[in-house]
Image (cartoon, rainbow, N blue to C red; front, side, top):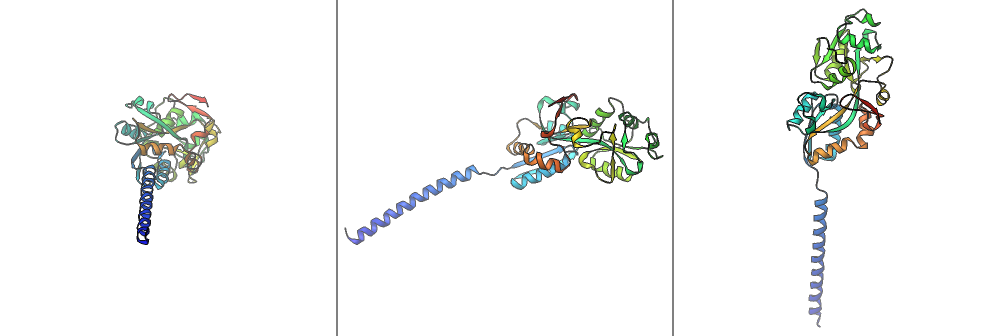
Amino acid sequence: MNNGSKLAMGIAAISLLLVGCGKATSSTSSKSSSSSQALSGKVTAVGSTALQPLAAKAGTNFTTKNSKVTLTVQGGGSGTGLSQVQAGAVSIGDSDIFAEEKDGIKADKLTDHKVAVVGMAPVVNKDTGVKNLKMAQLKQIFTGKITNWKEVGGKDQKIVIVNRAQGSGTRATFENAVLKGATAVKSQEQDSNGAVQKIVSSTPGAISYLAFSYFTNKLQAVSINNVTPTDNNVENNKWKIWSYEHMYTKGKPDAATAAFLTYMNSKTVQDSLVKDMGYISIHDMKVAKDAKGVVTQN
């Protein structure tokens, strides 16, 4: 064989090798691309203002890692969240109460995802001079039977009640635990924890109630029967005013919504973000509560 023939055969062999390598690379690249397709979609969560800060922060962290997901978190109250998710208008309905507790909601058509626990407590303007109340006194205040702080050991000052709006899950939780079926006195109503926080801190004689996550040094959180409003006391039910933070879905959630709900229950959220933001991890609860308010040991 002459040198020209040898050279031609060598070039042909190299060409075949390169073609073979090209096919292998193309196949591997295709498999890699299909296995790492980015999560995408739109998730909208509406409802509880008590849950809103946690949902919003968790949502920001989630979309940082899943940049093709658009996640929107809005307030509006638990009643709004439940009605909106039932209507199919949103992906998630955030609520402080069980769907069974809300008139007009078909709970059997919704799926409950408990993502945290929130403690709630009465809060007063710091100038009232009151740091502890008996449960009976708290009930008498909100039903209009006690109208001056001096009647419960505080300043000679008129009590100004700031209630939550009808449909508020925080209001339902508070009234179930404190009023026990009695009717609250008519008073000004606010539809968010943030609004209550500002009004009570700036209004002499004011009292309302807030989620623990909204406590600030501008307010006085009130103990009840000498039990302080702390996470530990909620976890074992020594503190009675608490509720789950629910994220309700209707039907089978899409991939993005399902992934976000899984993230909400992860250790990343439950063991750090939940606690850092003033909520209580569902993993730490030593008791469980059902829709009828019956508490059992875990």
